[in-house]
Image 1: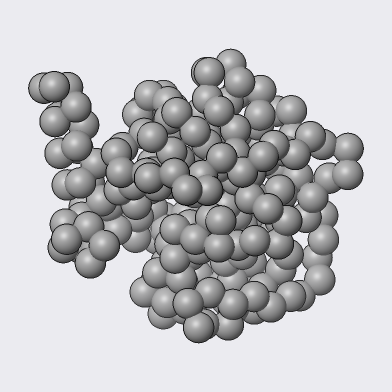
Image 2: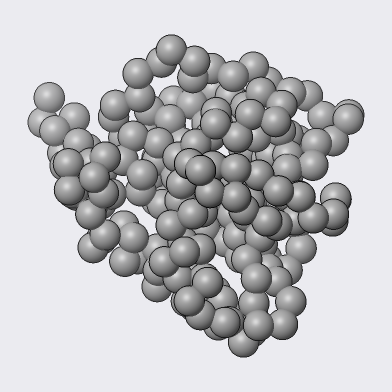
Length: 204
């Protein structure tokens, strides 16, 4: 685990935080499968990432599983450490609730390249895709989610405890999925887009 402070840029905004994408030299890296691919339906591709969430005292880590086409947050977990367990728990919850995607995209962080994580994907027949090294843009929709959750909620609230962080983030993602319209979704919410497309698929 790398604990140094680093900087990164997305959509002209500079973020400061801990390195949450440290690779493991012994883990297999899979090719990036999304280049030139049109992703326009639910469960075609899911993506994930870990981000650093500051509290009034200390910090926690947040992982989220996101449906790429509809921006729906399918599952999330909060942890005090960057272990693989909380990432696997979020993945298993998303699959249990929503089935399985065709492709799952991650960065090259050690949690996602670990056998514990990739074995769940393989067991469910999911194709594994990973960003190029240092290419945050390959997972840009999750980066945009982090910007939203931090500027719309985290930076406006000083969480007093890990339990409060868990409760408040769960409330935010409920709002994000059900009531927050997205310009990229023609003003619809992620839930509206995800479930509408699922019903259309079933009817077809």
